[in-house]
Amino acid sequence: MSETNTDSQRTATETETVDVCIVGAGPAGLTAGIFTARAGLDTVILQSGEPILRRNAHLENFPGFPAGVSARLLLDMMEDQADRNDCERRERTVTRVTETDDHLLVDTEENDAFRTPYVICTSWADTAYLSEIDDLGLTKRGSKTYIDVEDDGSTGVDGLYAAGRIAGEPHQTIVAAGDGARVALTVIHDSDVPFYHDWVVPENYFTGRGRDVPPGCEEIDDEERKQREEESLAVMQEYFRERHPDAPTQHPSVEDSN
View 1: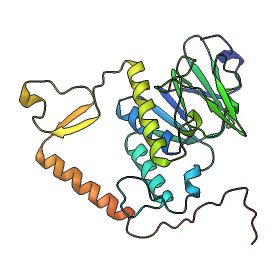
View 2: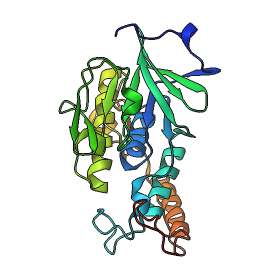
View 3: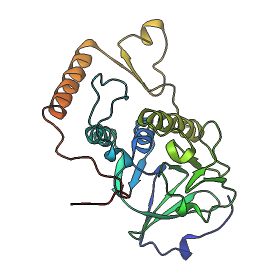
View 4: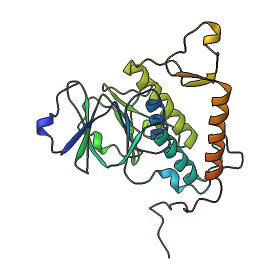
């Protein structure tokens, strides 16, 4: 990485070191965070404002919900899942990302910063904070700017990745979530943490065949499986007990006639 900034030149009052910093907390960012955190990487997700998905009136093409689901409820559940898996979610507006010899620095409008080897950009459609990054490919299409990525979500900059709409993926929730997971797996692979698959399997699935349980996998007995399923049922029943209280957010370009 080229030396474009140093800690002594910085204005942030506090710098926190994390393994992964994700910019954006829509479906791509939240899913990426769930995956990296479950792999044991210390992960922070930075969010400025609300995800575009909250504008959706009713989400009807996300697998697993035969009659559709409230977009706001789905986001609430994704946030809960990120929290349960030890992601740190912060309300922060990222102002710039800069490179040093061995890491990336993520500055925020709130006057703090994050030092990290890995940044995943999911902040559709904001790329202004990347203006100081050399060798980063950007493609403009009309009023939108996309980050040029390889098939695995990596960019031409060490440690910098992009997922979802900002990486040119189609504007669908399931695609954004899937791309967030795919890019997170790239980061996990590049980080060299021991990892096989994020699987929770029945007791003896591996050990009963004379194999060690691979990194990232967990064997659980029947009693533990039942307990986890009971918790899952209770959580989902609570979420779906009544309608979500929030109406969809209207597109900002629509004139308020009220």
